Image (cartoon, rainbow, N blue to C red):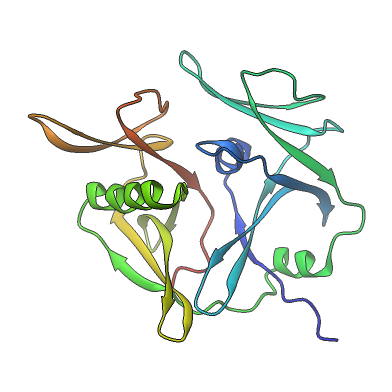
Length: 234
């Protein structure tokens, strides 16, 4: 039997970004993996993108020393911004919760992934857009059509800040999906944790960065700071 292929590792900058990835702007409650690897206590989110042939598995992770509390809780407080804690229960209705599982024997595929030993994924189609409004429009359209909130990944390459996401266009010729990486490039990092998009008369379109998604008339996409995104071509 062939060994299980390792997922693509994506190291999230910190626990704040990880909590946003797992719980912000979503109705679901993901399962999070907790284990030790090479002396580090990690928390991981195992997910996937529909890709060329089949899905491409993603292991998003960051360090988290939280003791034995079984839930990660997250909320947006209008006065304080984002809040995240590890909790003993899931009773406080002000928060969204993700269950954590403590893994004693880490899957070998996960170990290889964290050690940088994983199959190089095929490149997506790269589409650089001219402005943030185009990027927001892509995500808004997908959200309306499928009810899916795709994260915007932010990372640096060659002294440029890249902000983008992979959108799968299903059933492309003989492929399961055509993955397109829509993105912008700039000289500075986003100034907020969310991209806000609105269309108002007589102003028209507007896209900017905010830390609290509180305007019900606007569309929001969460921004996740990561060390790098291996599926983005070199």
